[in-house]
Amino acid sequence: MHETVADAMLVVPQFASVCCIVGDRYRPRPGVIVPAAVMLVAMLMPVVHAGAVWTLFAATLLLLLAPLPVMRRRRADGRRAEPMDVHRALSAVVMAGMLLMGHATGVADGHAGHGIALSAVLGAGVIGYCAFSGWLLRYEWAQDDRRAVRSGEVFAMTVAVVGMTLAM
Image (cartoon, rainbow, N blue to C red; front, side, top):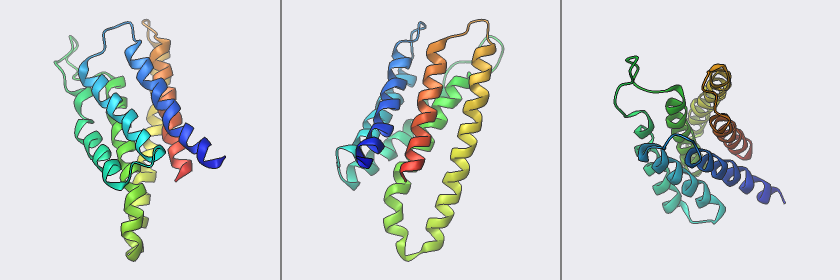
């Protein structure tokens, strides 16, 4: 039962996040859709027991695609990226870090200090990500152009990160 709940915590929020991206009333860019789809596949890897090589490949690909949401032309006000785009990029980095950490713990068993350092860095990243998610939810709801689908995406990704953290 525990494994089923942990698997659901990986896949369901990520699926909801992809649905929120695709369902946004503004046409989503490929730079947003592709990393989200890769993240969904990466979250499926541990669930279907795809093996370490495929999981590490998906995590590495996710890290390489993480900057895509923030890479775009300048906005009219001169800023380069929306806060939501930064959140999407951070989601990819944190999720990839968790996937890599899940497989690095077995490699770092002989060097316990490395595992503790990796855990501390990842833990700080998760705490920072959750704090940014809370700020972003407040920011989104303060906008005149409030979109519930964006808040749903932020909430789903935060649930996925917290669920994956608890499953580790």
